Amino acid sequence: MRQELVTGLALSLMTISVLSGIYWLSLPEPEPQEQDYGDLLKSAICIYALQGIVSDYHYHFWLNITIDGERAEVPANVGFEYNDDGSVLFIHPVHTYDNSGQIHVETVANTTVTLEDFFAIWEQPFSSEQVLDHAVDETHTLRMTVDGVETQAWETQELGPYISIEIFYEAA
Image 1 (cartoon, rainbow, N blue to C red):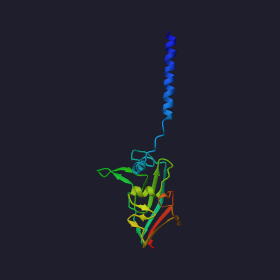
Image 2: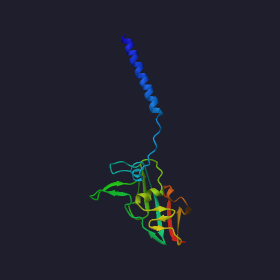
Image 3: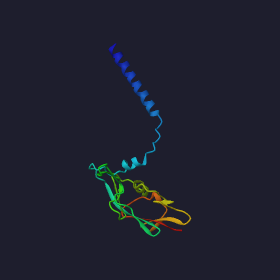
Image 4: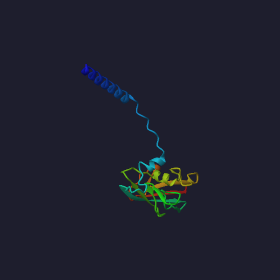
């Protein structure tokens, strides 16, 4: 009698397990949620939040923006977020320390970082139609070079060590 009870209980548990497994395996895959760009920059490719996390990859590239023949300054401390008391709370993976045009890229993984990422962190508009407050119109064009070679990559331009990116907003 006792063995019949144990056998019955074991068969019942196995049946429940198999049916549960079939149910869970038959559920549709959840749709990927669109991630907020700010969260992406602070999670998937973030470098550190000043809690001692050290970046695995650290390189520099240079960005020069020329508006009608004049250099537009890329300001110091792009990518720094501050507490109310003025202390640094967070540093984005792409940032500046000065206004020289040297941009620092630091990530915790071998992550693809694009020029669009830098402009998003800087909170400035950038596309093939606009840089900063300057939009293409009937009298002005935009062009971009990477290491002196003209490119149409614009926002998707991947950043890499020691490359030099120049963006020109100039008379048509």
